[in-house]
Image (cartoon, rainbow, N blue to C red; front, side, top):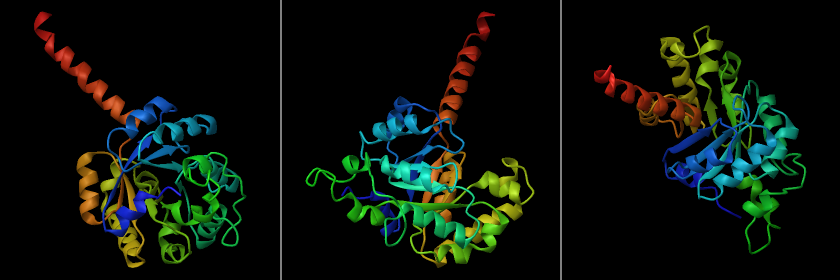
Length: 264
């Protein structure tokens, strides 16, 4: 089966640089995948991506060695199983608040006897299963190679974090900084630098380290991404395709308007 290179990066103590796709386009995903990210996450929670387009985005990412991940909309076994069957090599799941939530998440992503994932890796067997066995060995390695990543973004989740991290099968955790800020009574964007939010992020990071589990976080700039990696985060998402498009378009049009001011 195709190896999950993110696990190899973590095993040597490195940090994964993750791209983020919110635009429902295989072409956008393909462009992102060719820029040097370690992984690309297709966002089916807040991104404008449904299942059918999501599959084409996973296919586009697979034209490279980049690892395809998916953020699912919710802790829903049907959605989790279906996107893994489509070839996603890991799922990021929002609003995991209790060990019971985490156990349900893991169980939906693992085959029996560990979980109750239904057998039917319709595309995953071709992408991940390996040409030698015609994909027939996928189920033998999927539990080990695919990643289960709960998002930690509420007061309840922080309170229960030790118990969540003790659930077998959790591969990493991921901080949703905007939701975490709101859960702590702050603004979703500006509140991320509030001392209480900063302390909460540090608590999550330290708890994950104590359990030997990589911690991830979404960032809004390359400077913040570097800062988070220096702090010890091992999965750092660098903005998203829509924000890259917006920022560069804004930069270019401003440069042109500034350049023609002398003609007016």
